[in-house]
Length: 357
Image (spheres, helix red, strand yellow):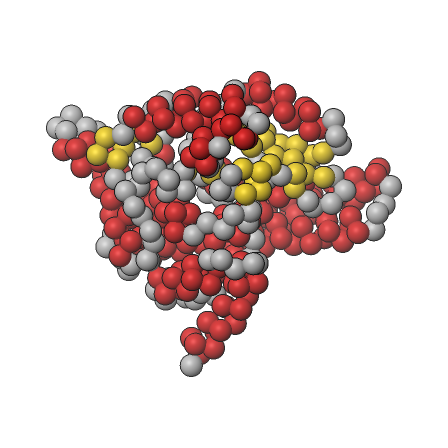
């Protein structure tokens, strides 16, 4: 997995339990059954991580990754205050093809508004997953006929939001140490806090929790390591820079769409704005982002799910301070809030006063 969008895609949430429990009323029984069957196959392959580590023939690199996951899990529970349950205490050997999900998203071309699907428990979500690539493409074609921007991408892991004890998949275990720990912390935060129907808040909060938590883990925590500490810090800095560029582009596009220009003129200006954003990333030493070029509102909104107001979240753990207190306060303020981003704004205003006092 890579930094930023590529890595985030691997953390797609598919609320399989809620879907399977309501299979009769969902109206899409074959779709739900396929998701539930795949999840069941994965869960049946779970083995305790400690048992896998004890095998004399296990690859040393895998043993180290497994040890790191258990350490990250304990750190999340004891230092960050996350609800971890039994997740990431087991390991499941799978092939990439078994767990690959084709993710379809769509958005309106004349405004930054996603097309959404409704799921039990998760609420309205701006994506839908398919294990069959042709089915995903068919859904994308159907949406495109309604003059929507569409996007089809792949994910290689998903979470049940704590309804089951999610295992560490062998495909996820191949990531580098910092990326692996960030992923585990991100997913465990979803088990700790999930606001139905608020995908941008959920994913952006988990981005902050995962990346800022990884910095604490490798810089001052139980796995302090100078090189990994630097890698974690660089990843968080890059994520925040990319987020600023994406949010600036989104603001400019919203102003463009408010002008209600003819479609041809709108598309010309949209292409110019996205090209400018791509140059901005390059100027900052970052790779061009396929969430920007070519213009595609569905792809941009998908990236923004993980990159909304990250600088505001960062105020809860300024500098090298312990992120645990800020994360606990975030969970308490957002849980049950009518608008979690409003609760974040109120919290950061109060947090600043507490920190300065």
